[in-house]
Length: 612
Image 1 (tube, rainbow, N blue to C red):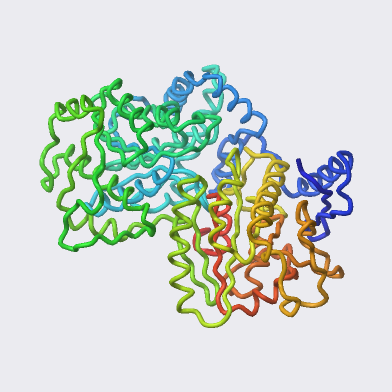
Image 2 (image 1 turned 45 degrees about the horizontal axis):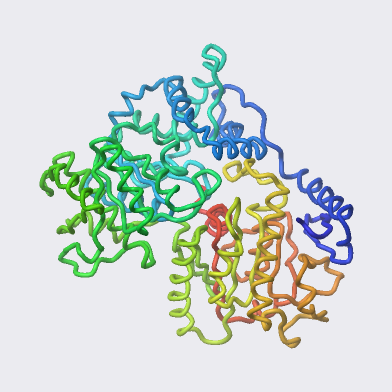
């Protein structure tokens, strides 16, 4: 429940008044007041787009694409149907969309596809594959999700997002054809992700890529990418608990879904998994007739370089790199590349299954394109560091138990190394949000060892005023849900820190600006004043909530990042307790994590080149 009464100020600042938190009636009125004020700038889903006119440009295409986003209430109904097992029609509907878009499944069979699923690491694995195979002089296509700043990031050619011009051209080809066939074939328009998947296939066929690397959206068995019938090779990265309302609440159920991308006679690779999920993957491979192997440790590969250097930071990237190497070698073997011998006979795989364990594939001697590819791979928003004067942004879109653990390990190692070289006071700030059904308390508990000086929470909204960039519009989650979830995340952190780190809740008065009103520990059980009016007194607290990413970064950076382009809608510097601490620190380390959508919003503000 959202406890507290909200109201929007002229500059759309969010204030929570604890003195008005009394009873359900006040709570409901507060919700309506805030939601009403915000909806004036946070538009409802756009209406149906018209067919393309010659003058229409990229943003027109994105606006039309956004009409295909499923609204929050419909999405909830879809989740309920998936829980009841009503998912068999998903792939049949997808096939119908493909035909209506002017393609055939037989044409898709001609794409030389690497198909990758998993709970964490599948995007990184695909990025490694893309770089390695492009180094071989191949024209690569790569379809992934979600995007961070612009939707065209999801469809890449030769390692770069497809151009605005090509995206716009191909978008209208597909959109208009699907729209024109709605009535004649008693069809509908595909939902957002389905449409983008169809668009990616269309682009890869028309651009004549040598290979297409396809990252699964959610799960595998019923994911719309699984209309693929003849991939060259399949991969399963590390498994964990995520999307439980869709995939199941145990790792075994999730493994069954992931193993759904296996195809008869097609080799597949996975990384070490817990025994239960691994047994399910083995059983799925046997049922389907897929040749499943286990990847070796990265150290088992030989090269003239000695220890391999990975472009993506973190110990967890080793297994992703190993999986990518196996997928790339298998693809090259399948296409008779002279660097590698032919595939082994399938009997070896069958014998491995009889031993109730997947056979371990051996390491091999790495070629220069592979070594260079691993070293130069980049994957935005994952273990990424941006250094701006006294500010260091540690950016990682981790949003599962496993990925947050890896993120914490990476952050502590890198931030400690920086701290040792720093002179003067240092401040560490957590900027966090998570969405959907994920257990925020469990994720935040894993972040506790970092002992942040401040924890900042905000919804995945770039700004509280209308954002002209349609790429980051998200109508699948209601505004009320976003705000409620943000406050739940804040409460979870307060509960965790109140028990274990009482000292986090106040600063010495000498470090604060102006007259200070201390907040007692007991007052932190509920929401508190977030952004205050200039004439009000500041408060002292180490956990703060802001209405949008723009305001959160504005307070954290205190004007010390000259490259940070903040919205003119709120030009006033946010003055809260702790501002002086941030202004006077010689080093400010900011970990941004919990949501790829949060990361995308931050990167849009921090790196203007990504919007070009």
